[in-house]
Length: 187
Image 1 (cartoon, rainbow, N blue to C red):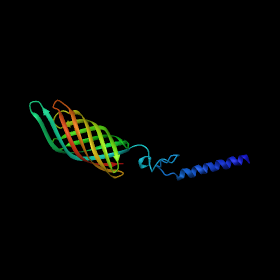
Image 2 (cartoon, rainbow, N blue to C red; image 1 turned 180 degrees about the vertical axis):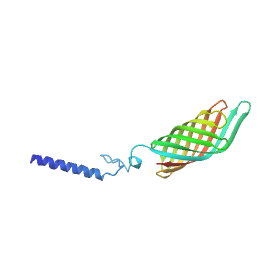
Image 3 (cartoon, rainbow, N blue to C red; image 1 turned 120 degrees about the vertical axis):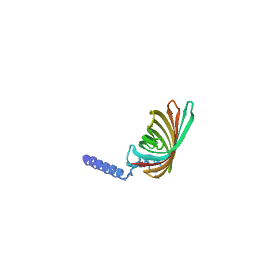
Image 4 (cartoon, one colour; image 1 turned 60 degrees about the vertical axis):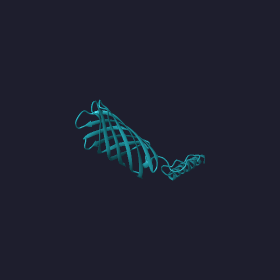
């Protein structure tokens, strides 16, 4: 009889745990005390990050100070893209390419992006290391801080505006101000 009691008890325990586990919805954060609120957990039913592609288009004002010639600046259209990996909802690593059309300047970058979400709006701060590579002349290294605002259209699509200032380390004190419109696809 004692053996049957243990067997029935174990069976009830296994069935009870199985039914209890089946009733839990994915992404719930209800704790044992019941104080958690709403649905939480990771996005897209999984842990870890996600990739994104972000084409952008806008204007770039390139200015430089040349000894004896004074300040020289010119504004042109620019386009490009960033490809990144969103490690967490608030942190991403990205690689980018931009091209200033009339001046024929390529911009290669790698850096981080810190996002603050207030859905449907989001704000970001970025810091990139960059190679400034004009068609004529030498390539230079630069640091590029940036800020922007985004609007969430769907879980995988965002639109936004951004500003970046490129501090290019060279003898002629080159600076680039970029104003861009962005469209971000997450996959």
